[in-house]
Length: 341
Length: 57
Image (cartoon, rainbow over all chains, first blue to last red):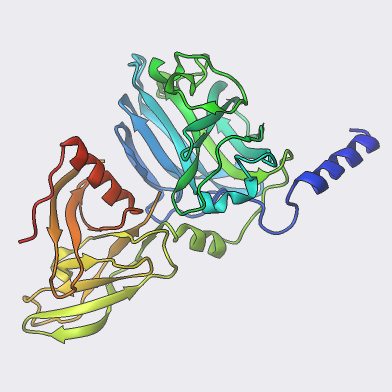
């Protein structure tokens, strides 16, 4: 690149990008945090949930294929971890309604800087590092959940780590709600039936979301072989038309950002008791480490240690231990609190 | 999301109304918060007629 071109590029970055402070809208883009565990197998079918790496959700619709999802060592300089998918059951008979991929959902109140739906709407740039077991082509989509719109682009993977950069056009249609619900879903589609790739695929154009137009029909099917792997890390979404260097955040910062959506204890936790009558009940209160996105669903691994879990706020929940606790009146549990999108 | 055995819990000593349900095999306490994805899915399945929520005992 010539000096003049470099200066021009720097000028554009200075003009159109947020070069200071927080640039990356994606949480856990370096795949450092995996509170739920580092590996989950047999995923596919109708599995639509968070399994390993925080904030990255499996989306599966009717696939016969199955994968193992893991937080793996990347081998990529500067990124110790990646999200890895490995096919364990192939599916070469693709039904029309099948769909498989990974996604991250983003709250509307974290996207207002895009000025979407106004005449000042900003371009947005998505970048990430990907690698596969062999060459393949897939689709990435930004889906606007508030206005049922989307923008899609295709990308390629090779057997080497490659940084993929997509700059998405500004969208002057459809403002995003300024709330704690999903406004954007960033999805990497790796397998799709004709219900999702049978229409007209258009690169980098915002349009009303039509399922048939969501995936490029020329894409590889991830489930075509049990040899297939897909690895991704260094995911960054930023305002503007330039992909800046990945914004590395400390593990502690990233973990706290993740805990807005999911938190679990690492060991059995004895709770502070604020109501206690050992012959009938004891009542515990657990204050969560950070306010969660919504009042969380609470699950627990040992029902003998708490008969009733109730979250009535986004930063705490109560545990009631029943009448059969005369020998041990302190509520305790290994629990999970889920306020994911 | 597979949801079974949904039942309201209310007016116990915690004095909060919520739903106990088995979600993807896990017994879960679901708050009546429309921003909670499990509560939203319960309401969706109820509207579709595929799930009923038992009254509190």
